[in-house]
Image (cartoon, rainbow, N blue to C red; front, side, top):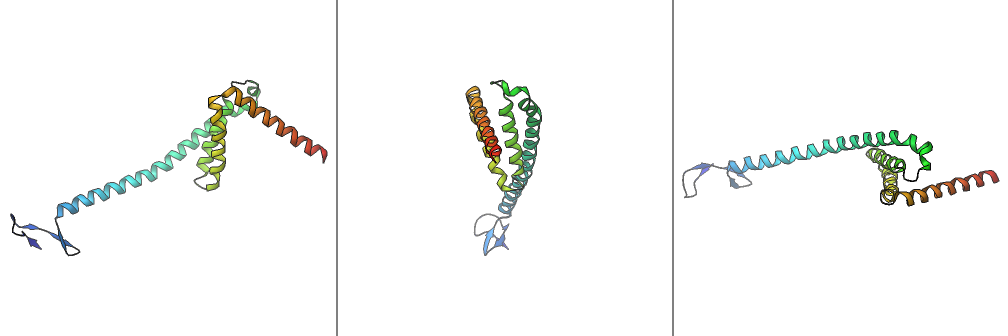
Length: 146
């Protein structure tokens, strides 16, 4: 359909739903839709890569700090091994959460337990260590009684 509607030279129009639309507007709409499609695809692939990167970083934190945490490092009150191990565990559980949603619970608990360690390492570390020792002692007493 061609039309000039009484103004200027004749231009081709595309009729969509009974309304004449200039082709340049369709081209602009196509570019916007294509841009949004590329954006959403990049976000989709970027999220996967970001989660894999986080899992790898968490694994490195666990490997690097678990030996110190289980060895003689626990006697040092200023050690960052517990903090790094909790963060690494949180990252690994967050990665596992993309397969099974309930893994977000231990991920949030690990990062939640690591947060106070970042601010008051000595005091919180001593409280965590005392709580863990009491829990182990309580389990030992319960098992010995039976």
